[in-house]
Image (cartoon, rainbow, N blue to C red; front, side, top):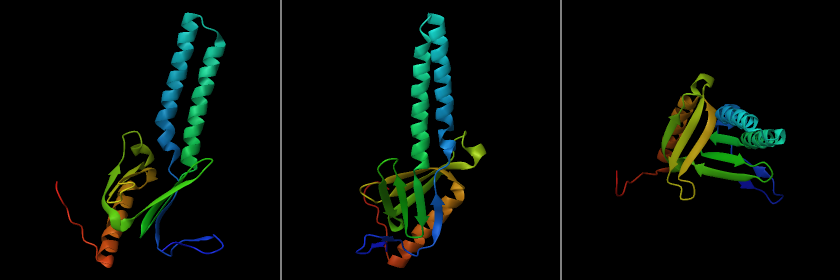
Length: 172
């Protein structure tokens, strides 16, 4: 169990870590391509309509700022998956930390969009019984199939160790 002592320092558990790291910046590739195409279209339209050059420059700066924020959001995201919980820390200026206990995980999906497959990254989607965050999307992770298998095994092992059984009520 994670604890905070009276001095306020955080002491993590000794649970074996399955994954620790940040998502890959590959997740921003499609946004960067879209932003570039939009900037080119605005420049072409401004040139065709005879608009001042500052409009193209302003639009390009706005698109670049949007992309920088996306890159920073990914860079300032840290995901830790151990054999007891999944923890995500996010935020550029302020930090937001959330976690879900693995015994609450009901299903794990591995999703690899066509444009992320060549880079070996994808998204792990956790479906849990957690009220606050019933669906977790851990994007931009490498080896998503192996990670999905490890999460499933760890969740089952933890539920068995704790004597937790799942009961489906309603739609099955």
